[in-house]
Amino acid sequence: FGDYFDHLLSWYEHRDDANVLFVTYEQLKKDVRAWVLKIADFIGEEYGQKLRDDSGRLENVLTNISIKSMRECVNESMQTSIDVLQTAFGGKVPKWVELLKVAVGAEACEKPMSGDFVRKGVVGDWRNHFSEDQVKRLQKRIEEKTRGSNVMDLWKDVDIPH
Image 1 (tube, rainbow, N blue to C red):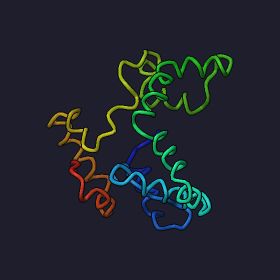
Image 2 (cartoon, rainbow, N blue to C red):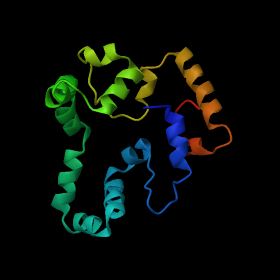
Image 3 (tube, helix red, strand yellow):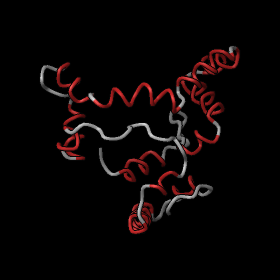
Image 4 (cartoon, rainbow, N blue to C red):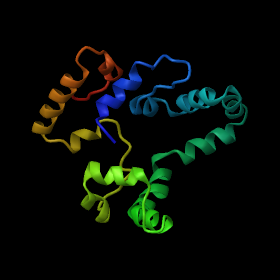
C-alpha cells in the first residue's frame, strides 16, 4: 500500500523482462479471451495449450473470471472479511491488514461496506465518480509522477485524464 505511480513505474521499467507479464485492465477488457491465453502461456506453455485444446475448459475460465462471477464471489465475502480474518487469527490480523488500516484509516476498515467491491467492470466508468476538480488534480498528479517516462502511452488510446 503506497503510491500507485511509484508502484507502476517500478514495474514499468521491467515490462519487457522475460519473467514479467505487464498488462493493463483496459487491455484485458478489450480482448479477455486472448489475454487469458497469454497469461496461461506466460505461466507455462502447456497451460495455454490445454486451454486451446479444450474449448470447454477455456469457457469455464472465462465464465469464472467474468464481472458477474466476481461480484457473486467477492462482494458478499468482502462485507465481513476483516471480522473473519480477526477470528481466524485469534483476534489479530495479518500485517497487510494493519497496513491497509493505516493507509485508508482504521475507521474505513471497521465500518461495513456500503457498496460493492466489484462494481461495473466498465472501462471509463471513472467519469461517473470524479468531479471536474478531482480530474484536474489527478491530471496534475499524473504529470508530476510520470514526468520523464512514457508510461502513460499505455493508455494513449483510452480516454483517461492525463
